[in-house]
Amino acid sequence: MTSSTGESPLTTPSDALLERLRDIYRDLHANPELSMQEARTAGIAASWLRDLGFEVTEQLGGTGVVGLIRNGDGPTVLLRADMDGLPLRETTGLPYASAKEGVDRFGQDTFIAHACGHDMHVTWLMGVAHQLASHPEGWSGTLLCVFQPGEETGQGARAMIEDGMVKRFPRPDVTLAQHVMPLPAGHLGWRTGTILSAGDSWEVTLYGRGAHGSMPQKSIDPVVMAASTVMRLQTVVAREVAMTDSAVLTVGALQAGRSENVIPDQALLRLNVRTFKEEVRDRVLGAIRRIVEAEADASGATRKPDISVLSQFPITRNDEQATRRVVAALEGTFGTEAVSEIPPATASEDFGLFGTAWDSPSVFWVVGGIDPDLYAEARSRGAVDTLPANHAPDFAPVLDPTLQIGLKAMVSAALAWLAPAQ
Ligand code: ZN
Ligand code: ZN
Image (tube, rainbow, N blue to C red; front, side, top):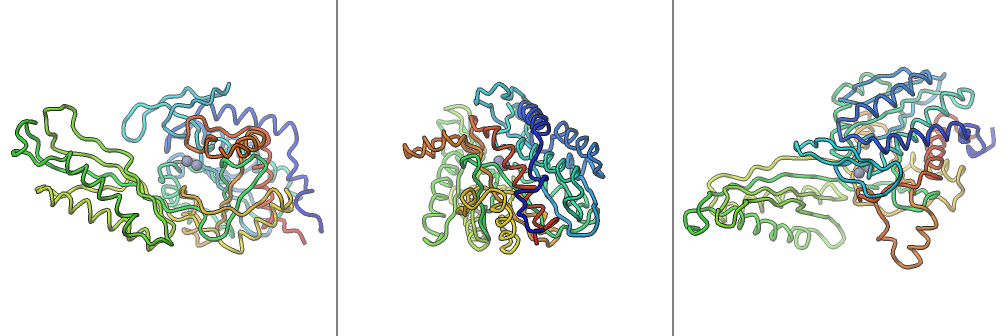
């Protein structure tokens, strides 16, 4: 064998398959499900895998699905797609836009939208499963297709692992995942080492003492305590993180009181931290705890604040050797022009937990989803940052060629282990 994977029938999906996948994508897009509630999506993936001859395990860690197919000797490759949508109202105006509603994990009614592109990830992996299952002559080894719940809340990968995933399935020689991002469609981005930041979200409850608004001397005012805490937290990145390091600390929710003449008895903060290094993460989280507790003390609070973890994402690290192998495969399929090194992003993922759980190398790369003409036009105006990005209500990848590119990319990467060119 001398050819690159670019010429393989595996990386050339038929028009009929692509047409089916387009319908599946539009259906998933119109029917998003919130984190850890992805029963419908999981059912679609599971029956697709079953029809292709995979051994299918359902309800792993909630709604997780694993499809396993053995095809002779060779390495084991794990491919992962996340399935969840987000609690927001879609404004794309697409004919297949979502109008779905549901109840989020805080018990709030909400609209639901696939604003992070996980519907594309599910469709890609279904296409990849189809290509490998219907061309057994083109590869050898074991394939694990993982449809993961709850990525957005950082719950899903952990839930699957806690449900015995490592014991129930063979150890992968590599774990692979890809994410649609606001790069031009047709373009792929990679890097070795840290590619995504750690993400930590906390909820802080500050306790004061309620009183009449006219008698502050009888209160311990949690509004002032919260205001002071929020301002002091701004000094963490400015004064405690070295210039050569970076971090983000955002207080995204601040809630206290309802009425102008009642001093409430508590206040709530929800905050989010992004870091690229373990030691910076420890330093920032330590500083937050110290400031929250000290500000409560400074206000004379008689009860310590409560701090609870809303979510925790590890740093996403790409194994150097495995990444080089993926990049060579992507360049073989798409050419070197389409594949470029990108800086680390301040987004977070729980995908890395699979590699850590098995002690397997993992590689995560990104796939452009923006209409290339639109992207070029925005770029010529210096306005790339105004294009909709993941989690924006008007973000949705352009179906073609994003669907085909992601499908071919993941097949190519998997074949770098399952059918390496010689
Ligand atoms: Zn997301
Ligand atoms: Zn995502």
